[in-house]
Image (cartoon, rainbow, N blue to C red; front, side):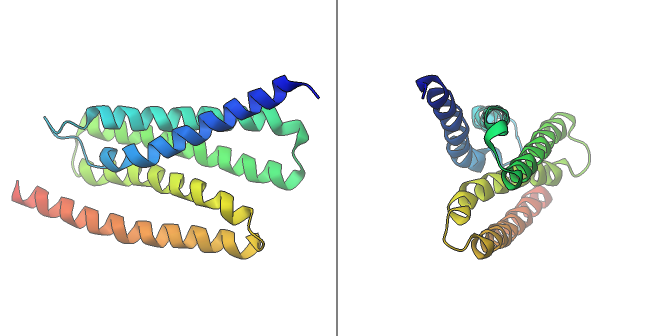
Length: 168
């Protein structure tokens, strides 16, 4: 067996995983809508870069492994690539909302960034669920738990955002 394929795959997995982990940290600071002098511009840029490199790493990894994947894995990874495309679109929309600042732009900005952030958590937690002894139970439980917790947290955050906007 040649070493190069193992090295290439390892680098792609690391690129994807490290981008995701850094994205989980920086996403907390990127969630807040931009305000003049808020000091979070670099956090937002880092988060966007993490999402971009995570997506590139995923797509490269899927393309690299495609011929060795079974049909179910191809479907799963194709779905993840589809989710990655939606994440890229939502990040573009968040950037556009922050740039245009029309109407209720802060709520839309938070919604777009939130979507990508929750997708990161699903991605991190889905791996152990898939590798569990009962993936058919663990995967739906993980997804539902992440979505439920995310919904509670984002609803509370958006309520606070509305209160700050009303006071301004």
